[in-house]
Image 1 (cartoon, protein in one colour):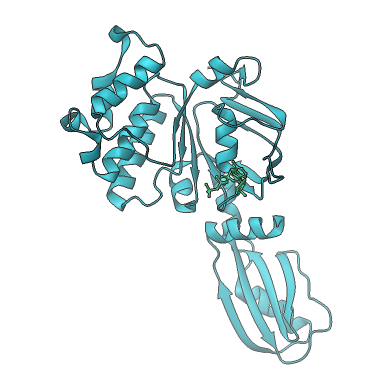
Image 2 (cartoon, protein in one colour; image 1 turned 90 degrees about the vertical axis):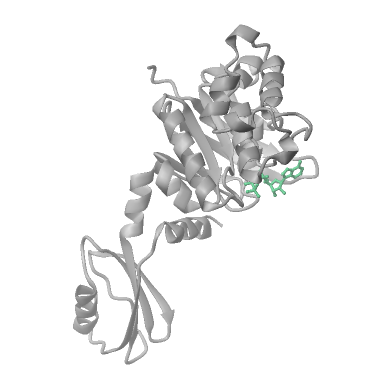
Length: 307
Ligand SMILES: Nc1ncnc2c1ncn2[C@@H]1O[C@H](COP(=O)(O)OP(=O)(O)OP(=O)(O)O)[C@@H](O)[C@H]1O
């Protein structure tokens, strides 16, 4: 396997007609063979980015390659290297899953002898619905059909845009299982999601976009390590005159006349150490509240700091 990334994005910007800047100088790489999470709140620019890679939206500036193909110089090859599972479920209700996959294969010019319709129907567990009208499928089945459609031309990269929004837990588990099996077969997966839990469970690496800007791009384990921080808010007996400092404190902030918020790493210190530092500085403690952040907090902190 080559070291060349599956996707490479360099200084990508997009301003829509009307002036809305959806992407602001975004650069990152998606390594081959990974499950890569693209996270961000509503309107952050995730779909814009995916749509640029898919050739559906024209970028304003910057460059991108997909599987080594420049999206400007080799748009057809770049498009062929990517399968996209869209957010919206859009089907002709009178096609059956088998016909939907056959039509899609036709669009890609795949010879009948090379089509994988039955295998794909089996993979997304729709074999028994192969000849039912799409309109009779449940929401979950339709979503699975979308995944199969995106894989018709065997792209090395599969992009799932919010695959589990509004989906029940069972189906979510099934989709995750399928994503993992594709990954095990070497497919690079890019997943956009609002759900940190989903990214945490599935992704090797997570990039976070907020207001069109990239604010994090780290291995999931490193991002989670940031969640090891613990915060205590302490009320002391008199107005604070300066903030106490100690090597094990990550952040010290005055949050009220007598209230101080201290963030520390659970690996380096405990609440007792924090209390001692305050006592040494001559404060008496009136109250103490603790909080254990999770990935959600890391996300909120990053998006807030970047706002
Ligand atoms: N065709 C368009 N014309 C003008 N503005 C647009 C267009 N498409 C998206 N935008 C705006 O660009 C910004 C980014 O939108 P985008 O859909 O890329 O975000 P997103 O992160 O995918 O959000 P969501 O999670 O809600 O899908 C938003 O402010 C959106 O309103």
